[in-house]
Image 1: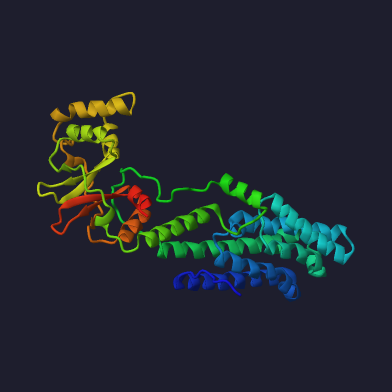
Image 2 (image 1 turned 135 degrees about the vertical axis):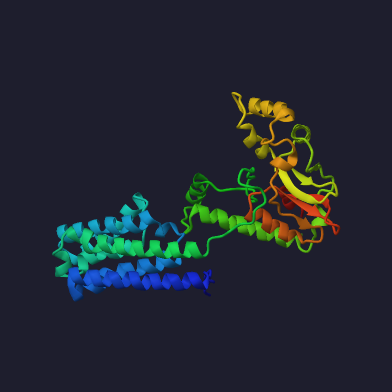
Length: 367
């Protein structure tokens, strides 16, 4: 029973197909020039297989630059060596592929089509064997260069078209809390697990973490179901007003161990947010041997600052803030948390007044 192949966007499929057409066309043209029509089928076979891997599984460890380049060149060297030093065709063929696999494993450049590059050096015929080690550079090395450039250009087009533009909650100098995933795998974590299982998976650590993150998000959405923000938000919200002094605001944050505070007007309508990072960035302009001293100097001088320095919250806060209605489903909040480097979302009522706050911990603690 066949598995389901993960679908890419239609744009990515189209651009990848066009890139493969151009790349393989150039590879065939170049190979025919160096090895003639009889040798072309042998030489380009590995590139055809590589094209499928490079375009259909771009995030696989088997298709990374070193795997693609090293796998072909190392295997080609081994294939030529076996062809020249082992007279028996059957033994040379087996040795070429077997030693190529061993070498690719040891050099961390495992790439399946590399086996074909090694084998072709043995069974490709007199014209290919006559090239000797020049076969490694031309046509193999040149074909690798052509296909690599084609893939690089294709991926550049795809990234340009489908570049994500996340929503803004804090400005560029705000703090960046940890991602929503409770655990993040390290390379050693994954390597140890695979060693214990005596297994190999065709996925990078980065992609494995992304899979885990998205699976966690979907699980939380499923568990929360149709719950609304009002059901899980914190209703005891500490907030400051637009005109509150910065020294008072900082003391409030320190007293309650808060990293940020929502900012409202006198009618309790949300106007922005102020973070500890905002204070720290402004404090960098003041003298001191460390951050604590610079913060102290900044806050002490705040009352007598010149007009171009922030005196009140409204002059330091970020006005770019994402907020949600009490009647919004919690899954909307989960999506916002995972798409933005934020820790809190202000919640407003039907009168557009601040009524609560959602945090990442709310998402995890709710069952």
